[in-house]
Image (cartoon, rainbow, N blue to C red; front, side, top):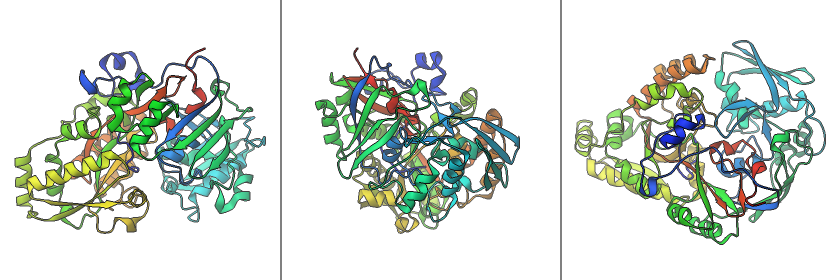
Length: 544
């Protein structure tokens, strides 16, 4: 689970779903009106090169340190600069990256064979030493990496050849291997890590990675500029543009105006309040792409009124999800059936129809919810929900939850916090004090739903409310030791059912990933894979 930026998911039209596996079990949206849209993993291919283009971020990255990057802005930049051992493609498949192959000689051993001849931005060649230094750094408590839990079962990471790294596990851990396609699998120069020390990834230090672009300048408060890496190893992703400039525009209205004026060429995660305007504009095109995200309500305190499952169920039943979607997502979305979105079931798409589609639609029954609250003895109890100006969707959902609570006898009070304080809720346990609920954007970095459900294990970093269920933990261990994707999906369905029965996270809605491309550019991947896939490399001129 992550911080709640534009709340999002995977949806396809029936025609697209039939024609392309890229939809990976996407939900068919209703047709007509604002909700009439299609999903595809990419936009039309570039027709020629560009000297440069400008990209909008809704916030300035707080770091460019891969070990600390845990949100959309830093990962959107880093996806083009640094690379991982594996790669998630725009159509939500996992393929070789800096590791050309891997072997699993036994359930507790992973051997990665590295790609030869890969050069860092300073011209030095990547070796096994760089991989070992990059991965083990995330295990060091001094680093403070939010990704450290991905390494919880790692006993050792060893160089076993000039281009071979062996990972030894204390117990089988399928997710560890899959997360080598996300931040945990990032490889940077060991020499640069040693030289920069604790300042790595800050505006005053450079980055020395292997991606198609290198960091050129970081003007704090203004922009980040990347330049083409001329010695990039992957010829198929040789950059079509020489430079990329990122600008930071926090205000949603100002960001939309920048798209429409042409002062920026494009951007991901569009303000939902401007979707209709952007879609009708002749200044560019809005595309919707594959996503693994759902907007959820995460319970932060299981000792208060929401400690009773009946009260959590009542609050879920009182949510008018269809109206929430109209107000928060411009009508582009569907009610969420489970905490992990349908798009998260992309690794074994043949299982999606049985394991996800058969789930019932969320119940909307205010009278029954009110009775549950009465029987639980929770009438008049206070529930504090964090809200923020961070994104318009947060306020919309917060107001809807407050209204739903009042209808069923719960006193839902909104606690406004600054954008920085809201983000802190997801990384600092002390920031959750006095809060019962927070709106989250729960998404997977990989196309495996098991990744989402790991965050509900006892003691996990992403288990914000410290929910604990021994049956859930045992079921997770069974799933995480199963290497076959189809069988693992079936085991993950057991976790999904426990989560739906207990509701430590209340599903709200799913909406598609979004991107705006101005009239002069094309070629961008459209979905959530852009967090790790070198998306900027494929952007070029829209005209020859």
